[in-house]
Length: 102
Image (cartoon, rainbow, N blue to C red; front, side, top):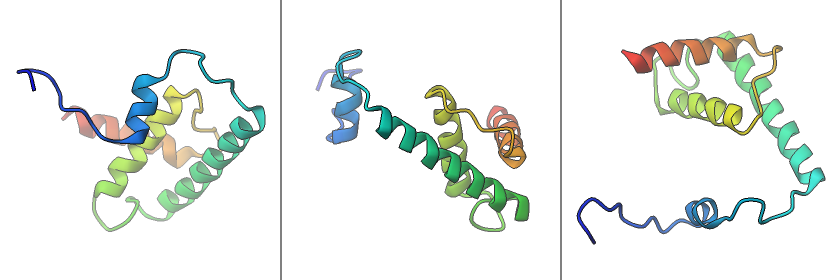
């Protein structure tokens, strides 16, 4: 391995992202719609959870909170923003961003 080069990650998901040419695969509308419905159900579930407790899994900040934050951020990148009906998630984004900057 050359100095300064990253090791190859033997992961099918990383290869799919790395090796995919733009617009190579045709989008399947029904599959895309199912994905949007699933992420919105996840957002609603997580919003209800955060309305009941300040953290996702325990009584303190854990990897579950980090994972939730990253999921919400990635969804925005994929043009799947948090719906206005999930105000707790808006707080999650604001709180985690300010924690990340500290």
